[in-house]
Length: 285
Length: 305
Image (cartoon, helix red, strand yellow):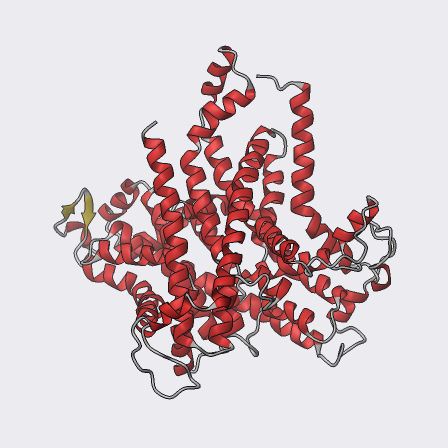
């Protein structure tokens, strides 16, 4: 079937619209981060920057300026960036490791209660986070884990474990069992089979699970708003504070937004294939 | 190890090794402990506590039965928040589904650079909801924002227009951000279903003289029905759980306040813990119930065809 010229024009117009809708707002943020504040309210509006400045970024990075409106912006931003990276990475590594080990057991090993435990864990996919937030808050206060890395990381793990487990089990399920049986005949034990033979084969599955967990933890807002109010505050909690403090500094907001965009953007650009696989496996609950 | 000579039993077509039961339980122990301690026990606690009066400002935690639940119906703010939430869900699910299917059909037509187009389309979904919200907060900004800039450039009287002064435009402004973030998920799910339709169906239809719209409605749409059901379930649950966009764009404003913001305010500002729990359980039940109805209905119509 050869597309008619009319259809080609419609397709091209549609693609342009779709790209404008998806990337336009992101483009505008990036452009604003390097536009001088004086140019912001210029009318008629310029869709391409007329002047270029590093002012917002250097203020965010605390170059030549320590406090903005009485706030130690760079110190706070540095801490929040570190917190976001640390908690998201820790949650990702632990969540995927726990899910991979457990998922293998659920797929290949027989033990009492296997089916029931799996069903109960997967059923919690249907439980939204806020339904357990308040008891969790009281538990975390009791354990003195409010505003600690351990506390927030544990919550992220519990939030993404069902999805990762579901993904990992479907990955292990699709592996041919013959390979493992051959290794058994050669005298390899369960753990050796798992670490030396199975794990190297499921790299793509592990990547998909890791991406979903990482992006999820990186974007969390309500949970750290409650459980990470100050010392472990992530970027997502810090950035809106630039809005609600007594000054609204759009240069600072767009500059910090740009930095919060970079990491997810890199993931989407370079790992999109795994992301899509994970999304599809994860959405068909 | 000399396990090779050990007797081997076969259960359910799989080869079992001695010690599997213990090893299996050890391997799933971290999952069981984490989920029990941080999800299942707290969930039970939520159900139990919602039947009590728990407020750090008041002594004692007396059992009050369903009083927290009956109170919701007389609570004007809760009613307002539910109305807003239903408006969000209605608009978001409709647009995400209709436009999402059209966008997926469009991407499916594209032969060159499809992965790059898909990556661009997914990007808004991958960003933190808060970052999406500040991006749009800047676009909606009255004096210097992109939206008023574009409208003014077309000669329309929107210079310094405040979008959050009017309830209708404020609700739309919030839901647009939500759609921007969630529509990529619908597109990915629907596109995958479209790509799994065998090409010879379209070739046969083409030989029979079918037009493209006819093919879309009689081949594509019926075959992606279950994918649409899955996508709609995701949209519905995400719509009921809207928080970041409303909170960052309009704060506690009653005009745009969704139910989850109401729960947050009741719990962490008014410290009515058990009332917040009752509200969150109702929200869980409603969002699951509505999406379940949709899935069942779609599956049923598919089966009878």
